[in-house]
Length: 245
Length: 249
Image 1 (cartoon, rainbow over the protein chains, first blue to last red):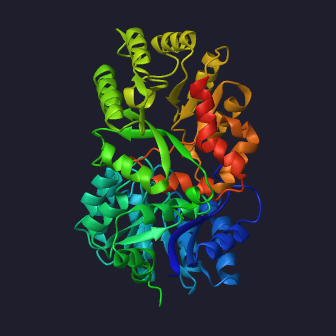
Image 2: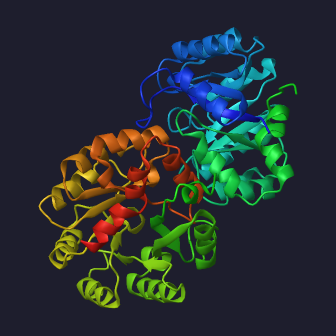
Image 3: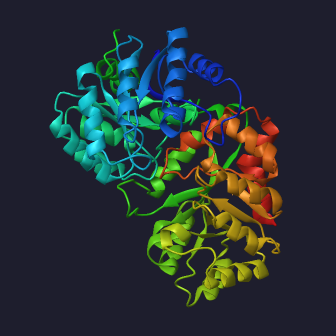
């Protein structure tokens, strides 16, 4: 079954990455693990230069139809973020917006984040956010109350109280969860399926920061039905990211 | 992919596993779950700590670990947890567990709320060194690896840094490379390239396989190593031989 990777990062900032051609590495890993579509955000845009990082992703997705882009925004740079959204979200090969983790920027219910989501409304695209604490999940729920029509896709990170996060998000139907190698605590895949339902859980490799085998190992080890597995690795991402079959 | 280790004939001994009630999350850490994972992935032995010893009381928890190990028929090997903050009777605890056959000890500064610079830890580490007993110490915070290196560089016993994080891996590699008795437990390495890089940096003899199971998915820890470009000989060292050498020393 060809996989649809809902979240990966272009960039070499983690210590275990080796230097070299990151695009070549992503291509090779996608080929090896049968990943047909890779949705990618720029690590550089999240942690360093917003404009340059997004530009690199734009170049990648323009050259390789296997990749689809997320535009990264930065709540500390509202005007530049608005420009970036305008530049990329009108292009067919960009799917949505990525907010940096709250610890790098601002809480999800802050005035700055609210402004960003308002700006993005006109593009009718999903927001990818990171959740580091259960407070982040609560902040996200309060944010979504102001924007019931927007889809939010959260990526829980290591150290987060993911079970509480899932419980908090259980009844908020415009939020889905990406399980990835960024959080490998046993049970998260099964609990996400149980609490959110099988249509609201997506898979992300989180490469190049983490190797795809970490999350593929999780999926293999998790107690899932074949139907749940196929929804997780492909079908749900198509729905949440508006990708045609 | 799960039978890759057995296909290439690699035995596995996991130095970082858990048993007991996990107070921080609803994850099943029963011995049955651990044994099931071991069977599935061909793990010959798992060295485990008991959560009661980590999060509540060392003596009670180490007793439980001893009992679980005995009931496992030798598949689960107990690691004794120490807590310098409990202080009173800790040296006697070491003596008692040595008499019971424990071969490895472990410290959890983050979970127990202390730092590796505190005096009672220095005292306990020196005592373990006098006894010739190797130990693991969790090291997820920036600065701790340097503190531990400063403490143990004149000791003889092997010391294994475990639960290292993405944030302090660089610091850890720096001290493991320069201090001969320091080793690294591998659950922090999540890339095949990472294994190659770390092995080249500190030497493959310094790496000891640990998964964090059943707290973490076992496959997430194993697959990056199996997919790395290291030779089968090197993988065998990481998966079993380095730990055997440390414990037998």
